[in-house]
Structure formats: C-alpha cells, structure tokens
Image 1 (cartoon, rainbow, N blue to C red):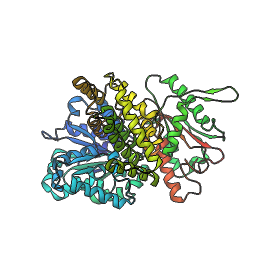
Image 2 (spheres, helix red, strand yellow):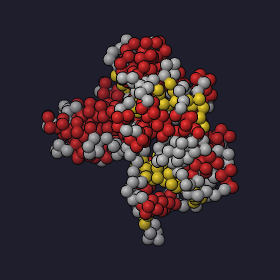
Image 3 (tube, rainbow, N blue to C red):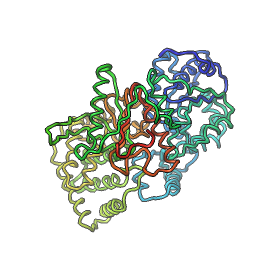
Image 4 (cartoon, rainbow, N blue to C red):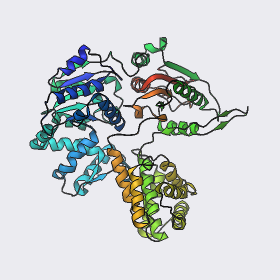
Amino acid sequence: MEIEWTDENKALMTSTGHVLCLGGPGSGKTTISLLKANDEIAKAVLRSGQRVLFLSFARATIARVEEHAETFLKSETRKYLEISTYHGFTWSILRSHGYLLTSATPITLLPPAESAAALSEIVSDDDKLAEKKRLFIEDGRLDFDLFAGLTAELLSRSTSLRRLVSETYPIIILDEFQDTDANEWELIKALGIDSRLIALADPEQRIYEFRGASPTRIPEFIEAFSPTEIDFTNTNHRSAGTDICLFGNDLLTGVNKAKTYEHVEIIKYPFRRPPGDHLDLKITVLKRRKAILESNPDSWSLAILVPTKKLMLEVSEYLATKQEFNNGKVAPEIDNEAMLDAEGPALAAVTIAGLLSAEGTAVDISQRLITDLCRHIRGRKGGAKPSQQQLSLAGGLEAFVDTGNLRGPKRKAIAEECLAISEQRLQLVMSGDPGKDWLQVRSLFSNASAPDLQNVANDARFLKFLNRGTQLRSRLAEIWRTTGTYTGAGSAVDVALTREHFAAASQTFQGIHVMTLHKSKGKQFTEVIVYEGPAKYRDKIVRPNGTEQDVARGKLILRVGVTRAERFTSILSPANQPCPLI
C-alpha cells in the first residue's frame, strides 16, 4: 500500500509526546503507527535493549500487524519492535515478579477452560472474582482475568519495576484502546508515567461494554495525558473503491435506510420450512464464493457473521450438510470453519488425552475419565453457568470417584459406559501416528450412548492444534518414539493449550469462516455476509421490542461486522421480521 502523506500522517510522524489517534475501520491507524515506530527506531532514539511495544487484544489482530510490519519495516528494524497481546505482555511481567504479590510458589496458570470448570457453581461476578483472587494468593493459581489488574498493582507498588518496564519499552502503541477495561486502564496509566503512549481508537467500535469497556475511556486518556489528538475518521484503505465504510458510518445515524450503496447488498429472505430454513444463506454463500474465485482464486476469505453462538453452530452445520428437497434439487455441502469458544474444545482435548495415555487398569483409566468428563461438563460453556442438572450430574460422578457410592440411573449408566470405554481403549492397537490414534480414541466418545460423552467428541472436532506440523503432534510423536505409548499425553496437551493462548500469531483466514459478530472484531476478510436467523424471537442483532440502548448497541455491532469486508458485504435478514437497522 502506497502511503499518502496527509496532514494527519505528518502530525503523527512529527509528534514527540503522548498521542491519541482516532479513526474508523481501515483508516490506516495501524499502518501509520508502525511507520512511526520505524521512524523512531531509524532515528536511533532507542538505546541498546530498548524496543517499541505494540499491544493489542486479539491474536488475529497481532497476526495482521505482524504481516503489516513485514511489509513496511526492514528486518533490521523489526527486531526493535515487539508485538504482543495484553496477556502475553502482562504474563512476561507476572512470571518474573508475581511472587511479590503471593506467598504461594511457584505461580501456575489457570487456563480459561480450567477456570470455567472450577468456578462453575459460583453465580455472581463479584464472588467469581473473589475466588480467583483467593486461588492466586493462597495457591498461586493465576487466572487470565487477573493479569492486567495484578500487573497494574505491581507497577503501582514498585517504582523501580515500573521504571524498568518503561526503560525497556519507552514507546508503547495501544491498539483498540476504546476496548480497555478498568484494570487495563490502570495498567496503561502506570505505563504512561515514563513511557510515551500512542493510543489508536475508534469510539464507534466500542462493543465490549459487557467486559468493562467504557465510553469515558477516551476522555479519560485525554485528561490523564493531554495527548496530541489526530483524526483519521475520513480515511478508508481497507475497502477503498467501495461504499462499505460509508454504509457502516451511515448506520450510526440511520440515514442508510434511504440510500443504496456500491458493494453492499441487502437481502430480505422469505420464510422457508426445514430443510430450507437457511437455504437463502447457502445460496448467497455459493454466489459470493463463485464471484470471489473468479477474480482472486489463490488467496481469499469469506466470513459469515451471526448474532449468537447458537446460530453460529447451526449455520456451520447447515452449510457442511447436503440438503435434498422434494423437487429433486440438492443444496451441496460447503466446507467451513466455525470459530467456537476455546473452553469446550480445550477440556475435550484434556479428556481425550487422558484416555489416549491409558495409564493403569481399566478401572484406573475410567476413574480419571470420569474426573475429566466432570470438568468438561462444568466448563465447556465457558463463563456461562451450567444448568443445575449438569452440576448435579458432575457432583454425583465426582462423589462416586471419591467414595465409590453412586445413585441415580443416569449417573450409573455414565459410570458404566466410562468403564466400558476404558476397556475398549485398552483393546485399541495404536499406530504411532498421533493424528490417527487421536481419532481412534475420539471415536470412542462419538460412539457412546450418553450425550455428555458424545459432547466430548463434538467439541473436539473444533481442535486445530493437532494438524500436521504442530508442536503438539510432534511432541506426541516424540513420546511414542521414546516409550511406545502415549504416557504423558495429558501434560503435552496442557502445554499446547497454554502456548496456543499466548501465540503471537493465529491462523490465516482462508476459505469460509462462521463466527459471531463480536468475534469478528479486529479481523478482515475478502467478503462478509451478515446473517440474522429465521427464528422470530431470537438470533437477532436487535431483539424485538428492543430498548434505545439495544438499538444503539446493535448499530455499533453491525458496523463492526460490515466493515470487516475488503470488497463486498451482504446482509441477510428475514422478510417477515427484518432487522430494524436496515
């Protein structure tokens, strides 16, 4: 991309203090901030051991920034630029200095999946936070949600540590600043005492209020640091030559309803009975994929963005399945990838790994399997509380492992099936190929009678870190070569999950992806399809009879979704209850 040296770009390049850059999606904030970093490095502003730090929330964003850096920065310059997530950056500090805040050593991570399982019976957010703090202080178990707050506490209590961090990172670029929560803001305020901050923000992309993002954050930054303010809101590089960005901006005021836009398509589809309930979406996907392949066959991505997780799974399954109609016509299968929350697949991986290792007798294996299954039942929905029935089932099975006593036909059936699966595992002949052997073990769950055991296999379908060339696959192969077994597979999975969470880069988006509108934040695709489901009272961007606040929130979320596209955006909404925003 050729850089146009506008007044705004020049203002950032010549700035010497704190800076606040405001701009919409694709406005070039990230690119010009990287060029600013390059300029500072080239001017020999940094001393030996110092680096410019680029902080963002999502690994997908980090991957995109890495690509930008390779394009615009020379290799000798890039070594002075550190690109990281907030979790990666704060963990590097807590790993070395967190002992100052707890008497328990060593500090060990409590990954999101384990945290969800451990806190499954706690209802209120305040009680969950209190338990997370207790686990850290008393046991040294560190929940990811505590990273920013504890790091902020460390830097506020230790001037020498704060100065050491700022000495290492004299310039810090803060991506998606509008999404920072209260703890992250406290951390940023501490860093800003001695480091120069360049905050990149779009107030109209603030869709994470549910996790603590505040409309006051940008004014707070201005009050705290008196930054140079630079406005990029009238610039658009991502979807240049289209009206996509204009449509997104017009959504905020409602003027889009009376206008038509180039490269933005609104489809109000008719009600159809199954198997045609999502047929109009499938037809649109086939049409848009064909258009993309005609012009860009080698590298492309098509995102289908939906309002809810339930609809995401429903749509992904529908696309991947062939539908046959009474008139003899067939809607073909469409390969796609759903962006599921990590907790279910992670806990499923631990459960399968435990069975893969198969240490001890069938009874020993079944006891561990029941324990792992209970964690999966408790934590597979992430922060959402399991039903009372699920909690009761898990509690009863855990008591059985501890006491040998078991009541209730459902619990007994699951315990018996766990023993049967363990016996079947001991009969399996392992090949030494981790991929094939993993699928062998996973099939034991797929073929189970109990839905809770089947859920393990269903969640495990979304695992990506066992693909060829991954570290986990190599580690499992090494274990097999050394021992002729998979003893220690559970530990290998734990390490892989932790590395996956901290990885600076994530997958490259190729092909068709299905995700929620919220998950699309920070990503970009060749084309985007935003889809509201046919159900009358659910799966909507704005719920029926929504409040003014619901409508305002829906505008922000829809704007984020449509502006992920580089070339074309389609919006599908049911004709009998169309989205009020279009």
